Image (cartoon, rainbow, N blue to C red; front, side, top):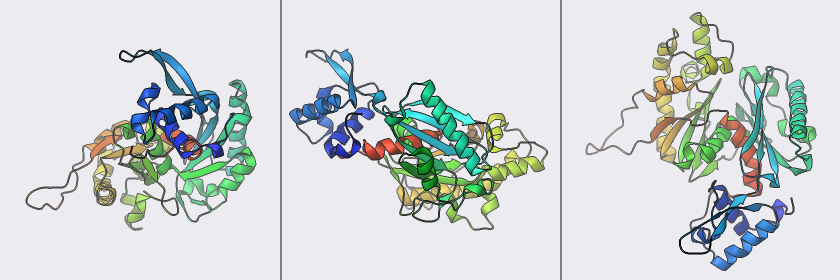
Length: 378
C-alpha cells in the first residue's frame, strides 16, 4: 500500500467513506454534493487516492449529456484485514479486503475449550489461506477479534460465558498481538454483530438501530446515525445487565433454551447445532418463548427509551424460524397520552446469513484507519 493510514486527512477519509457506501461505484461529479468541499478540491483528493492505490476506476458510465466517465471504486487489493469470532462452541474467521468484502470465511471444527491450542490452530489456518490466495502478509492491516461476553476493564479483558472460561479474564489483545504480529482491535460480539448489520444488513435502511445478539447468552449493540456506540468500557448494548440474578434463566439466552430442550428429550449439543437443526415444533419451544417474552420486551423497551431507534434487529446466532416466532410476540403495552403512543421501531430478523460478527470484527481496523464511522452533514 503506497499510502499509510496515518497520512490520510479527514477529507480523504470522508471521500473513501462516501465511495464505500456506494458499492456499485460513484462518479466524481456526485461526490462534491455529499461533502462541504468544492468540486476542484474533491478532484484533487480523488487523484491523490487513485495514485495511492486506495481507489480504482471502474466501468465508464454515461451520465446525462456530459462526457462518459469511469465510476470510482474502492481497490479491494489495497489491503486486507482478518476478522475472528469466538462463540461458545466454535471459532470462525474471515479475510476482508479493502473494499469491505469478506473474500473468505471458515469455521474451525473443534470446540474452543482450550484457548492457546485454538489460537495456534487459528493462526495456521489463516497463514494457509493467505498463501493459497497469494495474499502477501505485509498487506495485512490488522485483526478484529470478537467474542461473547462483556469487558471488565480498559485492558479489554472479557468476562465470557461458562463454556469460554479459559478465554475469560486474560489479556487476549496482547496474546493476539504476539501471535499475529499485527495491530489488534477487540470488541464483544454484540457490537461487532451490529457493525456487520450496519454495513451490509438492515443498517443500510435504518441508520439508528438496536441490535439484540441471541447467543449462548444474550447481549446487544447500538448503532446511532451509522456509527456504533462502544461506551466507556466497551459494553454499550450489554442488555443482559438489566436482569437480576434470579431473572437470568428467563432472559432470551439460547443457552437456556438448550437446557429446556435437553430436559424434554431433544438432544442438541451446542448452539451451532441448534441453529442448523432448529424445529419450532420441538417440545419446550413454545413454553420457552412464553417464559422469555417479558424479558425480551423489557430489552426492547429499554432500547426505545434510551436511543429511540428506527429498528430493532434480532441477530447473533438466532435460528431464523425462531426469530420469526419472536417477532410475532405482542409488544409491551405503552403508557399513552391523549390516546397516542410514541412511534414503535420496526422489528426484524437479521438479514445476514453468516456470522455478522466476523464481518463487523474485520471492518473495525478498516474503519479506524481509513474510513469514517459516520459522515458529516454537507
